[in-house]
Image (tube, rainbow, N blue to C red):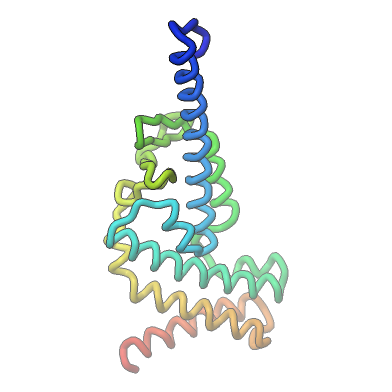
Length: 204
């Protein structure tokens, strides 16, 4: 785009600045996408919201996701401190470091199309069934969550998610207190604490 002679120095300068602005946008979009993924992994709701365009539904969904993810991380950290790498198996399912790194790599390698204050990120092979949409808001590129997934089901599952988070944090405390001898014992403890949370929710 800069390999053509411009009619005037002014036009040339504007074209030059515009080229760098676009390059900056691409880098900022990748940074925002990776930061959002890491925030979800860490249960850092404030940072996740900073890099997201939200409405009432998606904001509540982020709160729910953040609570359970942070509790899960607390449990895994306690288990790893007690049993080393084996402690990572205390919880089955959910986000893990390799998945987060994979998402971050996808953003780094993504094909990004910028149109003004909006952008679309797709996989470099073009096989995405659901691309990620971004919008520039307050100078920050943010993911448009409402276009990313249906979050209504997440908000409906809020009470159950809260109980799971409670079971995770309770078990983490019990691990630190030395209640469990093995990772398998701690996994059973998670189930027991979840059952107890369900009973309390039902008034039992």
